[in-house]
Image (cartoon, rainbow, N blue to C red; front, side, top):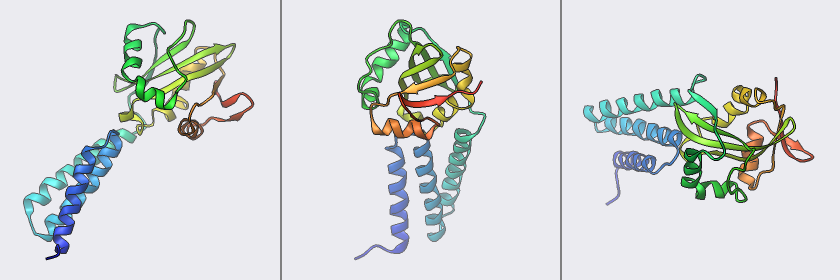
Length: 205
């Protein structure tokens, strides 16, 4: 015997909720969970079941609340200078070495004289940037954000409103030579353009 339309809606809602739990990105988790909770509300209406409607309406509201915070222009994002040999930094890079290698296959470790920024979100470490100074140019060797926060617009902020951290350090240009096509596409999205020596971002004073 086949499934009824109401049962299909219920199974779809359940599948979406399960899929949301498998998401490594905070934003994707919230979006899929929101869709799942809305479908569950529809399922509750079709049954009808007031507890299912109320519970999932509340879940949908919570997801909307957290997504609003994720995309709010006043998110608590930061870029904090840190020494290239700082134990916390080295431990952070070691912990994420496999993920870093998938975007920056040639990156090993910061060198003496490198400019290093610890990228933060809500006061917690979310990524790192490593660059080598070349007069007023910073050659970016590593631009990494943890998988959970790649949808939180940290890159847009860093190379936009947050770029003051570079100009305050005396740089007026960033140059990057991406090691993968996915990283190249990301840099182009956040404002870099093709240049003679790699992808270039001119910084505004």
